[in-house]
Length: 320
Image (cartoon, rainbow, N blue to C red):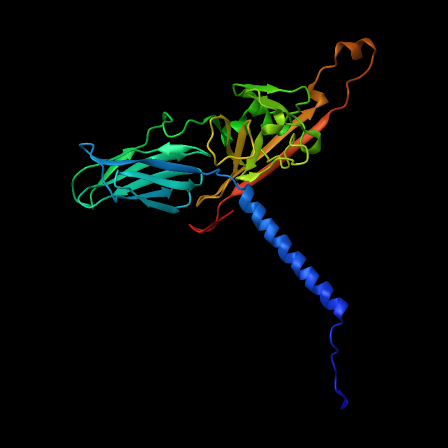
């Protein structure tokens, strides 16, 4: 630089202190963020449990159980215990094919096993003696009696959420159909955001003691505990379950109901949809009062429309 030497001075002490403090604050903020994610995350996926026996009813230990998600081809595995019991936890909701293999037995495939949000699905497997390369195909029971949990609650499917009439396209209205639910005078299941209010008592508990989860994350307004932060669009809800009583210790922070919502995920097939809901005073008749006063109809123009799409970005790996 024209024969001159460029000298970089030392950073002043006040600047170093400010920089160090900023770095510490940033690390603390990141730590708190991840700590909160861990502390407030709840179990919302389903699981498959069951027993593996032979045709005489004797337990088969160390059998390999593999659950394959039909939509994404993702595989989840477990082995049976000495008593023949197995559990495959934390399964995303969907339809599964459950494969069971053990030395000296034919492979058994239980097809069309439905896994729901926050629900245990029991799959009993009975292996037949034979070659390992032989297969026995069994269809899963469509209706099951819950024997693995004492929790009381109902699963509402995404189809029900989308197709049942909901004022304001608000899923909260469906929570009022469950037994033991009593809305307060301040309940508002039509509006959303700060204007809404999920003030309803379940089995006599205060309405501030309910817990709303979206994909396992606390969705309550922690300021008042009488509202929810995010109202998922009805088109994004895969299903939700309202657990009203006798739920397990994995659900903390509430003594009322647990409303566990899971959102849609893409699969290896493309899916999409469009919707339109319209209101227009052209289709309405005038009421008696306005006719009597020789006044016209009130103007009403409302057009709600949208679309959704899902599918694979990379087959069997990445989905939108």
